[in-house]
Amino acid sequence: MDTLRVGVIGLQGDVFEHMNALKKAFIELGVQGEAVWVRRPLDLEKADGIIIPGGESTTISKLLSTFDLRSILKKKAGEGAPILGTCAGCVLLAKEGDRLVERTKTELLGLMDMSVDRNAFGPQRESFEAPVKIEGIGTYPGVFIRAPLITKVWGDCHVLGTFRGRSVLARQNSLLAASFHPELTDDPRFYGMFLGMF
Image (tube, rainbow, N blue to C red; front, side, top):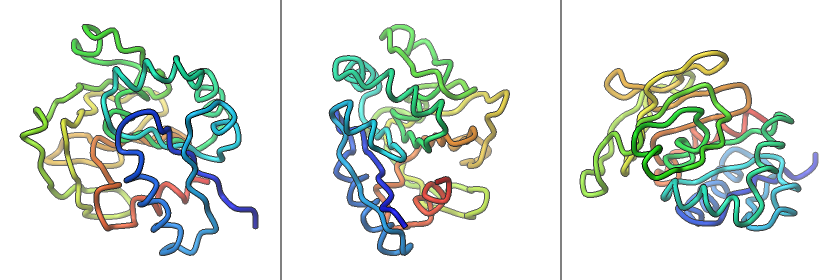
């Protein structure tokens, strides 16, 4: 079996954390895989799957254009490559944003049939950890840091995870968007779900 190459968009945000969590998941789940730091178009072209990490969505959006990664990312999505967006990555995957997205003129990737409310769970000082109910996994430790909320889904997009009845995880074909930060937990089950999409 060939080695699975999962690229982490390494422009800003929780890049190291995702790289380390992926490496741990590969070992624990018995997957022959490699976590690749993506900053150049060629790195992205070679990736079998992609993670867009948390961070600041407006900044990441601008850097995707600056580093010529935006069009390749959309092409990979169109080809069915599994893509995970966490927190800011969740915002960027959406087709619709809230007033803050409009005010900051954040250019979304528009890949998933969903709307998001950026920073819906409050500022960074109000970060918290709470159990999330995830379809196929059960209860999972959700880490919420300036987290967005998935306010609406339609078309091929459906909710997979909730916190207090609110949507925090959605999937559309090979695309997965999480409001929370799975890379900040020691629980490999979320990455097992993502890697199961390959």
